[in-house]
Length: 384
Image (cartoon, rainbow, N blue to C red; front, top):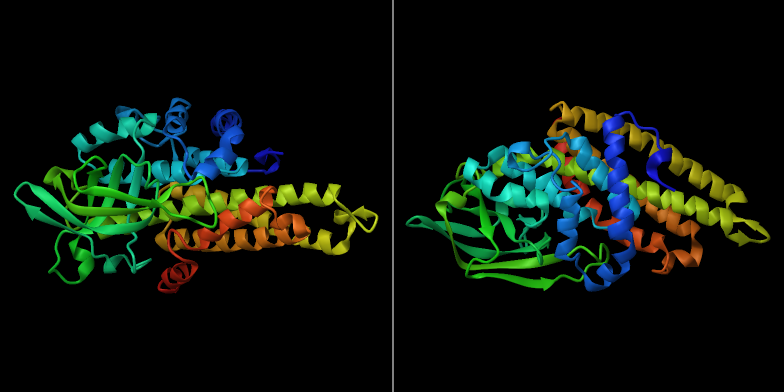
């Protein structure tokens, strides 16, 4: 089974040809190794280089910086196919959908020339460090500071729940470069911090309940010195940049949620068709058919909405509240579909040897990262 059975309106023939390349890579380089990577808690660095060689990383980066200069729909295809295969979408999507755009939009020419080509090739793995212990979604409450000392910033603080934290070579660090100014968001900046800087330390690879192959870490900064030229864009504009880029980040999460929900549904239809109870396939029971019919309708609506959102985003028209709504609806619907699909697997659904168990665990975080569902409702509600 593949996503080919889903009618789409957001993609053209070039997009679908790219999809076949992505699918080939996932089948050849990802699927055979997923169980091992989940056990190890990390995707090896050489996989990033292979993904770069296939053109899967940062497709929207302009050709002048080693990219393909394509539209965001190509990023979406990588996420859809990766999630449908069952893994690694989180790390790839963070680099392609989030970090790359910050550099393209706000980076200096020197910063773009230095880092973007290696991000495209997979030689450089990146992370973005926002969340701190005790702050969660409250970015204005961050305490990590970067204070000027001559021609350098001196960074002190810590971050947590950082995707790609164990493997990142470059971290986009959100911090306070002005600790006196009010409101606090006006003193926030984004600094580019290389992982080999003295005073930088990775914490443990955090033990999560899902997405086992994605390394997620604590990061510590003790008197880490970076040159003033490592400031991304203008000093003090970090919060504005974050708010500007969040619609794409949240659309990226919505894409992953939709594709994983579709995979769970397809697997469950096949399972109920072949598993018997009381002398007949589980699919023949009315409760099973009605449950799956309801989920199928929601998936149909979800794909239509996703294509609408993709088209609006590529036209530069997706608003922050629309991005928040996409993230809210698709992540909440994903969880409903996952939970009902696991229920239809019965006891087998609780066993990690079945894909639905791993998918169910992995899906729980989509209602949290990128802003919790409660925060999404608040953002949407403010525009009513």
